[in-house]
Length: 364
Image 1 (cartoon, helix red, strand yellow):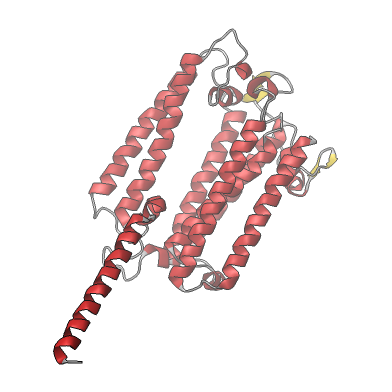
Image 2: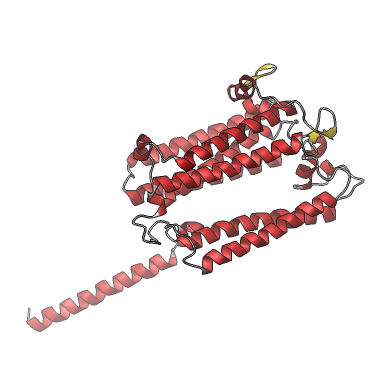
């Protein structure tokens, strides 16, 4: 073969290879699923991540405020509230608001709308102001930090501590509302009153975790509670535990043995949050048929839709947990064949918990 022929052949081969690469690129672009990542694409960007976090909270506040106003417009005082197909107003009535006037409902709706505007402004500020924080997230190094937020155990512990403290104060506010500021609705007495005898005995409160109730063993566990003093007492204990744990994590870094097992990666940390929300959704299924916390006269007696909704949300969040956890393991080199097995076992456990919840409620 002449040198000219060889040169022509190499040119054709190179052209063919380039065309193949171009075809692969077009195919990859056609099936690009990166948009599914949502806010996960901001994991390595400090300000947009915080801005998205605040904007998300603002959307939740806006939804709550706007839908409360819509339900106020639909509300008919001469029809039982349980028969009107409402979602938010029944919970406000259960908390003791609006039993004699809709003014409290309106004030709560406006408060949520104003809060949503403040959160939205904060979100926009952090999106457009790229240097307002003095810590770094992921690969976005700010203020001379040598490592990003996700790789800093002490900073992550501090953030966890602040979240726990906020949750603890939220539980404490509920206790104060029930015991000091107006009270809540009691289905046993069919009235709103202050709960003056809160159960603080740890044997009674923590006994519910193992199904030990005032009436003997019950497979529904915590969801078997049938009186407000125990409900409020449980929230009081949760407030104390969350605030104490929050202070601990704020001032103390994780122990060494935990650092070795914990994966410091944005995807994995997001997966832990999704797992927590998903588990809460599944646990709430057990409470749906509890007529102490979901009185029939307020929420009605058809709970199947709520069970399906909570179950769907729980499974969705847990699926997101598995997805982001596996991505984080791949990013950090911790991924192996057993990861799929563990994910499958977690899925099986989720289905088992959801089935048990629905099964036990069917016999309740």
